[in-house]
Image (tube, rainbow, N blue to C red; front, top):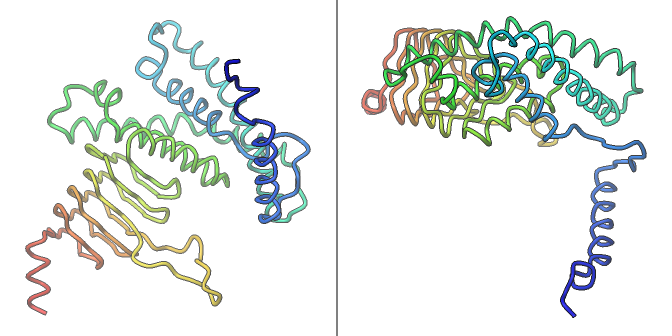
Length: 307
């Protein structure tokens, strides 16, 4: 007889062993058995929400291919209603999850979830205007760009920044898991890794973008431009008396307004890159530089030899 899934794969044994493995993991993590459905937000659901929000923010560019201008408002309203309702479900899941794992008695999560999503919805017009500055910065910052439409449709840096602006709002609203999921969806698609906790000013442009890493506590000013393979990272990680990592400590760079950071530069630690500075390609920088600096590998080597 031909081998079938039921007769050839030993599924009953495998399913049983997987159940045991799940039980061992949950016991090690101190997690009670979930009786009421899903415990965590869904990455797939968040992906659909963010995709819908991108369309609602830029309907004639990132919305459906057959949309006409006379139908924009209807499409935006319908899409937002659906997306925000789906987001509310994911917010509930994260708030319940956080309450359980922090050992709190669960407060009025429904009211908190509704308030968070209402605030998020109310912020969308301002987020759209902020994103407009990023799109214009990309258009003016790249001589190869033929139009703002090309930038919005094609540039991975712009896609990553759209996700970041949305994720950062969720992060500040107390939803770090949903924010991180949104950021990692963009990371998977673009190769650009922006932690949702990073604070980024208007008119931000990532050119090319592959390999860019921006850490959680980085602060970036206005009109900053960075290129591919730039890292704004931590130099060291602080620990407590028991050797456990301290979370949320300021450990990433501050980049002031009008700074340009060229490809491959690595900037580490809680240092400040002064306003209007230019950081050359492949520079490794672990000290602050004053406003108006031009830092290249050559002048760093000269500094080292002089000392």
